[in-house]
Image (cartoon, rainbow, N blue to C red; front, side, top):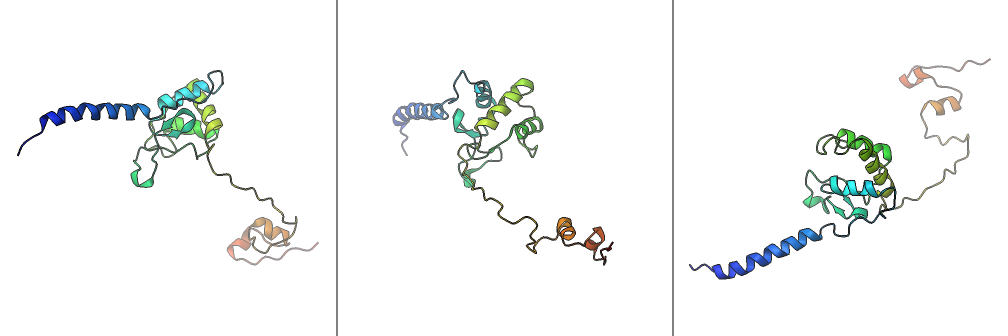
Length: 174
């Protein structure tokens, strides 16, 4: 068997350069929030502290899995599609996510945590599909017959806490 060290010596540096370019290209779009924006510092903090596990195009973060097949335990939510509210973000930051299993608690604290929460509340979910809103067209006071809760029982003149347990009650007529 003959080895090909000269070929390996020429291919290895080329491979190293391609890897460096590929890694450097990850998230190369950078922060898309204007530096003059009140959300810019939160975006920079998110990119620095959160982009390893979360995806958000606004800052060029690509930390989430792209497919369930290649998902790792540490892949966090893709915030392009998942909308978060300010209070939810603060809760997750303080408690290590919602499960408390993977994300480090207090990855940012104080004013920095509030800046990240404000930024994420503003920019998360921008690519989420829009769900149509269906207006309630039912007539007030009309019974559909499907309701079995306390309000349905009181609307028909009967029902009490004991009716839920099977005990018979009769409305008292005055």
